[in-house]
Length: 395
Ligand SMILES: Cc1ncc(COP(=O)(O)O)c(C=O)c1O
Picture 1 (tube, rainbow, N blue to C red):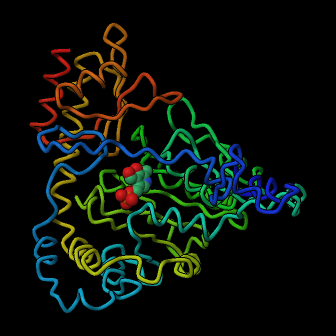
Picture 2: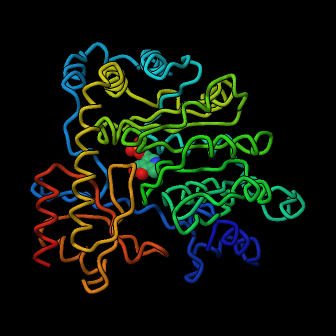
């Protein structure tokens, strides 16, 4: 029972204070939407270091030496003080790396925090029952192209804002009427992950530009580029002032491309007015000094991360070809993972997932429409990928 229901029961009771002794009316302090919420299920984080971990799309190579050195140099005095609230040194480094101005950048505690902040900033929570919800004529929530990152609807549920779900085409591309459907749904924020997760499909930026243009005046288009470092192109051209798009926000993270998932550092790129709005809702010190220092070094030494991107891309090709040679169907991927379907005569994907786990190899299985017959496999080092292939051969 939600809080409102509990309170109502309380009010209905004839004898004051009797609520405390009612055995069938447990008191709850959560909002109803939180009580009803099924939280996000992260990929497993096994404790055995020996596990071949190909399930949460981490970069298999270590962070750049320059990043580790920068962290080692953070002294006690920096830890004693509060960090710079808006991570200015990082924003300057990012501005230089992406040819933008610092006003177009916001630093966040992982890309996930940026998602939460965007929903808080742009989407309308449902009004309390009886307060004009029905006649508002504007659902005000998020629109997502599905299937995709399952955190999006969870964050929407936390903010108590509706979700319009728009199915991707058979080939995992966005439907041509995507923008029209976002507008018809009255969504305030459309989220597209590109390259797409979990398929690895990449939409070229001109298609995203056309969508953004249709959404101007209606909704913010957030392009989640968590995996873009492994792709041939990104959506940065949409931020060029000459295009006049004031509604585009890009999500970036250091978790994948920069081997820093444990650091929790992401950032948003967009027009100054969107970024300004996001700054208003951030925690006073949302990124700590260790993370800011490491993230700044990571962007200043992108060449070191870039080497790992090349190695991951080379292994992506080799693993894809090796799986195809074993009659797996492998989707072309612009990410650091492959979405692959085992051959019909092999065991089902769910069973292969379990068998691999028993052999110390963790991949990702989603018990969801369109994904049930597939496994998502993070690209590992050559040795890890070989271990996977040998285990599959044994199965
Ligand atoms: C599609 C997508 N977006 C955003 C993120 C957020 O990453 P992080 O919070 O680690 O920066 C992830 C992480 O797995 C992701 O898969």
